[in-house]
Length: 267
Figure 1 (cartoon, one colour):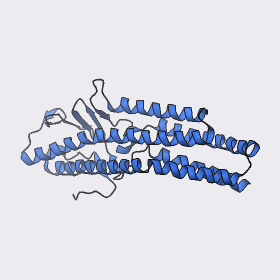
Figure 2 (spheres, rainbow, N blue to C red):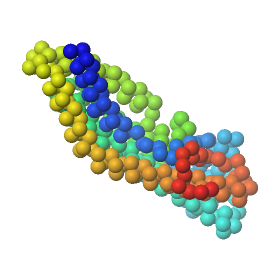
Figure 3 (cartoon, rainbow, N blue to C red):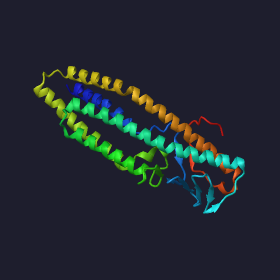
Figure 4 (cartoon, rainbow, N blue to C red):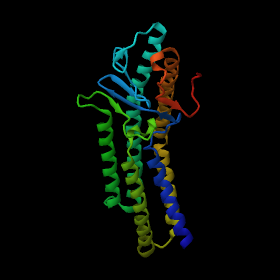
């Protein structure tokens, strides 16, 4: 009986964990950030690790430490490509984050409602978690006038961390730990008040997990496709940044983006 109960615990955890995994922005290209970046009302501002301030305006004018930098046609092309790529990546990140929350919220709610009932406290806590996360995304990515904004301050040097906070990760971990206690109680109730066939109960949960996975599979694949597109856009920004470093003397110290994965572009 202990083996069956342990297997059921693992089965239920495996059902729920992939759902939560969809919340994370899958950072296929492992884009690391060196320095800080803000995007607010169309102004892109980068503070390098050495303390230089690089600003690109919505008109793609370049300033370094508040001094305008004259550019030839080729240099202007790289600056414009850099700005446009980052400007494009921000709403893509928001879209991926929102879709991830939607998928995870549905899957987790279905799992715990099936196992623990619609009125259980854990499901309500997960609902609140996802509501809080949606609010966090709005606060992080939208200015008061509804325009997009971005601020890397406080991130752990990774673009994929932009939509999440350590507080959110801690809450997820805490709820997963609590869920194990609720699951044990559900198993106990099944043993005391059910027909006592734990093998049948475990099989039912496995089948339910498969059904949930099938329901979200298409959405998850679409989300992965969007993550791939985001990776390509960030790689274009990294590519433009490399050429800006090489061709514009004032930007020799600019090294905000670094792809640790396989880039679709050759440097």
